[in-house]
Amino acid sequence: MPVVMNGPGQPLDVGRLTRVIPDGIRRAAAARDSGCARCGRPPSWCEIHHVLEWENNGPTRIDNCVMLCRPCHRLIHHSDWQVRMDGGRPEFIPPGWIDIDRKPRQRPMVHLLDIA
Image 1 (cartoon, rainbow, N blue to C red):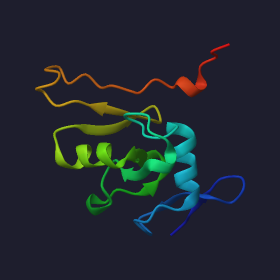
Image 2: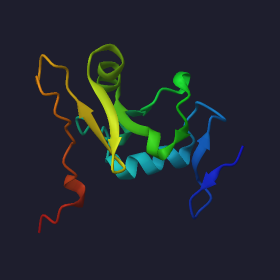
Image 3: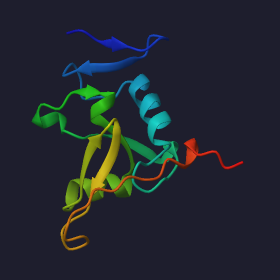
């Protein structure tokens, strides 16, 4: 099983080798999502969620992982909210009772804005 690494040798794609998230993927998700991708809690409060669940043949790689705090992680697993990746960024689809059109939502990338 090949493993994709970034420049410093941190794994960013371990395929189906393991469900456990390597440090490199966690760090890459933290840099991309700046904490919980849904609500913005800091990375130290967050877990990594497989967008396509590992149990359903989802790979352990950065483009299938999203950083979520525990409450948002539970929400994704135990409600009608869904998460998917769009252009390398996570977006969240609310249940029909919140938004009848189920329009996907992304948390603004405030950390990339020039607030000067």
